[in-house]
Image (tube, rainbow, N blue to C red; front, side):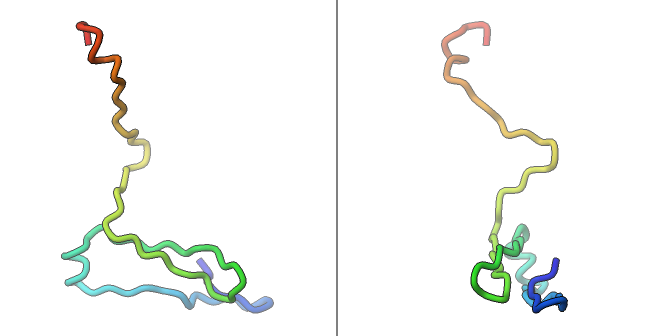
Length: 72
């Protein structure tokens, strides 16, 4: 994804780095490029240990009515 542009020139400038120690300590870190507003660069959002769901996996849902019916 290009993170900076000026006219017809597009570059990948805004990046993040980590080392092996960081990956061991915070294994699920991810980086998102946010939309640029009134600046020429796209800001980065670093998410530390976000909860990730696999594609197609649905979150568990619980209905309190299940406790009322003895068949559930």
